[in-house]
Length: 363
Ligand SMILES: Nc1ncnc2c1ncn2[C@@H]1O[C@H](COP(=O)(O)OP(=O)(O)O)[C@@H](O)[C@H]1O
Ligand SMILES: [Mg+2]
Image 1: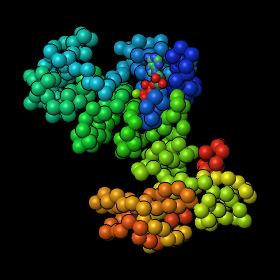
Image 2: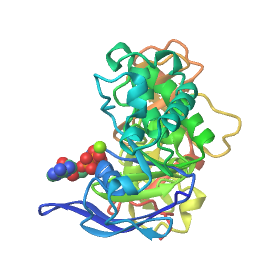
Image 3: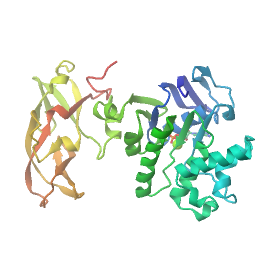
Image 4: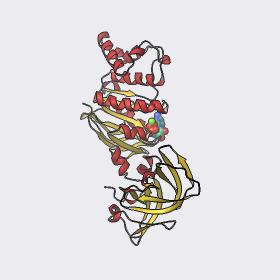
């Protein structure tokens, strides 16, 4: 089994608190991704789970057992880092088997496990090579293989794909997903890459500044961001935002646009409340989709165009901010051209201007 329970976890480096009161429950076989900007405390949290870093305060339980003082080798975990840390002078075979040899497994057992894992990861043709003779993707697989041969209950990954180019990263991302389905083990995976987080996770944990901002499935955190930080951190391009004031039951923007209040916010908003409204570029388009029932339409001048192939990003002014609209089925567009835009009101977000929290956020 591989369940993890984290209670009021804190980490100080000197006087600086870099992990602040983290509470998180991870179920057996779950794929949990910790995502956040650089310096948000992801690696430190993971290293405390691994036992590589002392816990300043709080408790970590594996399957209900307190592991705070358990050394890493007794935790039944395996960790894969961004730097694969392979032994350059050892063959791939010996790199894969090294941990088992140290743990005094028999030669037969080591051979069996190494051969199984190398088949699983398509490394069997390369077992006699040295790491320097392998590609980046192969080295990455060796690092994962070295973790898998130990047959741990829990895998901890710290940005394992960051050193790979974009194409290989996408390929390895899928391999990790398939591996999780095959191995059926708990994975805690740290990344700053939102595509990795969205595609891999069964549960996403968004971190900022040593704290958890939101926990949910990828769809939940994307569709119902708790606050402006989560709303703008996930999604590309980032969610468009502009301030508005609620007057006479309408949202009044700084440039004179007046929007109706979406139904789901009506019971939370107060007269004269200052809010920040948000809309993702895919919900602001020049192509009115027949499923969009409730929209606000307006004309805007095209400031710039970024053709991406299947779609184009159109830059326009809205609410005295620069907004990005996503055009499906792109055609040639002239800069300065006026076009009609449709903002899907069912996909409009409303955050309190002071707290930055979604008006309909629970608790
Ligand atoms: N060994 C250390 N000594 C002092 N400060 C550290 C140490 N390791 C990390 N930090 C600080 O802790 C914070 C969180 O770091 P880290 O957990 O590595 O963030 P992330 O993995 O999210 O980028 C950062 O501000 C970092 O500078
Ligand atoms: Mg890190």
